[in-house]
Amino acid sequence: MLTVFYDGWCPLCTGIAERTRKLDVRNATRFVSFRERAVIEEYGLTREQQERMNQRMFAYDGKWHEGIGAVYALACQIPAYWAAVPFLKLSLWTGTGQPLYDWIAARRKIVPVGHCENGACSLEDRKGRR
Image (cartoon, rainbow, N blue to C red; front, side, top):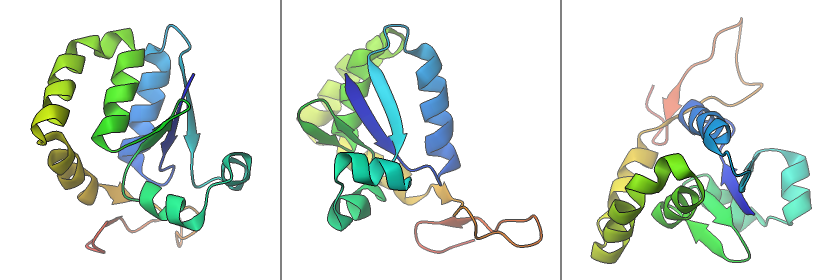
């Protein structure tokens, strides 16, 4: 079983996790938000791991995978994503996948739960831009 750690404050990440859960016809994955206290305790996540998970998706199947490596590990488990596996592998081999992953991750929006006022939340990207 591949456990995928995603950012539950990130609408993009949450949407991808929800769609992928539906596509996981083999029940080969488990998605958990590293923002949840129970997940932190269950997996014994250190502060350093949490900070790195804030920047990249992580997956664990007895071995840790991060960033594009986690995407590759996930794609290998989901039949609907199998067509992407050779391209992801090529991006890992050529070294182009991680920079592209980091570029996308740096531009995602984060909605911190419990930090909204009057029913409205300000969206900020990873660099604090609104």
